[in-house]
Image 1 (spheres, rainbow, N blue to C red):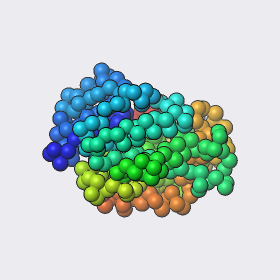
Image 2: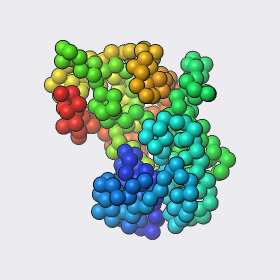
Image 3: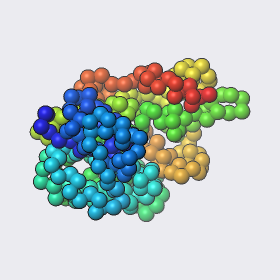
Image 4: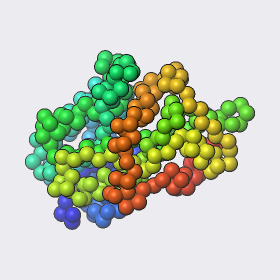
Length: 316
């Protein structure tokens, strides 16, 4: 490990930043970690640089900026951001992933790639749910999922497909409970009574880092589904409410009702929650598998405790 060079795409993002920190916790010297970001002068980039990491500039929307970036690297973590960098454009995300894969193919030093991805939901839920645009049913899933075959089957890259899931932190972040006029909060997720497979960002980073450190001999060609907890949303709502000393009720809204909220990507997320209820997804995201890799996972209770100030602020 002392001589292995690691490269993290999107190093200042939620996933990439977690991976960098986890690599450092695994004992990788900062000098052996290169992080790519659109803005190496940002505060987040400077924070990583202060830990000894090298930060380089790269823009996934400009394939020319990737030329030679991975040279001299052994192991690469790949992630794209459908919501920000891609602007909710699945074709743009596919173009970004193709540019990354093509450059990796041209880089002789790279021995292992960990591709943070999601399922292509179309073969699984296509019989039940119509496409939103073109053939895409859950665009922020389907584009990544469709590109797994380009990495593995077409270019035959030494890749581990690292399947993530719903961030635990989203429950008090981007999709936090809504406060009513009576002061009662409602957590309206279209999950019926099915449990939700969630992953804490810390666990996401730790799992990817362990796979990178353990290397291609063990992991190239394999899939891993990282999961911290499998918990009903009604239970999540109750735990959040107890932590913030407020009432949070779970409302099992319909998929159509969630899509009707109308914010950008609402229909995409509604289909995501529908996919989360299929047995194939639940069975793949087995918490015991993550425990075997990580040793210990961050339960939803632990995530709340770790972020108690943020939880209270979200439910104030």
